[in-house]
Length: 320
Image (cartoon, rainbow, N blue to C red; front, side, top):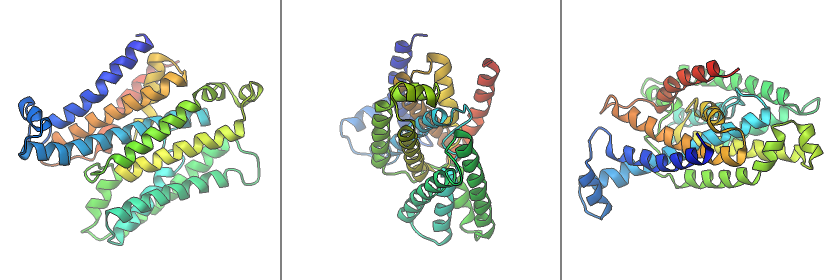
């Protein structure tokens, strides 16, 4: 399939996924009810669409787009196809501080602020420790991130063990990925737009960096400055995604791989298509998660993992 055809297909699929989310759920909505609500008619359908489903669908699109974009950036930064937004411990830091806020009985704003602060703490911790006692390398950063992530994982297990029974289900549900409280998608969409703008500005440099730092430096790039920009952008995107939805796995790992197989590795094409495919994929996954066993809801992170594992194994089988 030609790149242009795939891009147009994804451009059409992104709003179609949002439309799918508006029509499906524990209460079905028909096309006529959707049309009436769009024209301004009052009623239960309009309330359900504009106050519940549309904000959640837009938040899901923002989170999926940010995770896929962050995964593509980190795979270039580390030159490692297994890199994803959670491999450097950013999500672990966010989850630990968010769970601390929940354990203290604090409200939603405190949970979001705690997740954002924990993500930035982990970001500076990993990048700072990776430069202690030697020069920065991809392997040094990756190993530091894996160790810090393991430490955050131990702290999360301790918090869950200490949590009272009344708060434990909510903490576990958030930890597995939950968009039920994402009623304000505007900050996530703004972070996605800003991250995509910065990433496209760096796209040509990323093409050079993917060929090695020596090649990038020879062709006029500043690898040190570029590393900082890429790592900071990917970290901010991951922090914003975790703040909105908790830990949603496999999106940042699978989506960039799938697009590289279908259309190549030119980041001027890859990055915006990661946003479209990642966002649309998470909107559909979240809709299925809240509709499959309605009125009960599944954590969307569980569903993305169940879908991501066979897809990733298929990609490995197809790759030399």
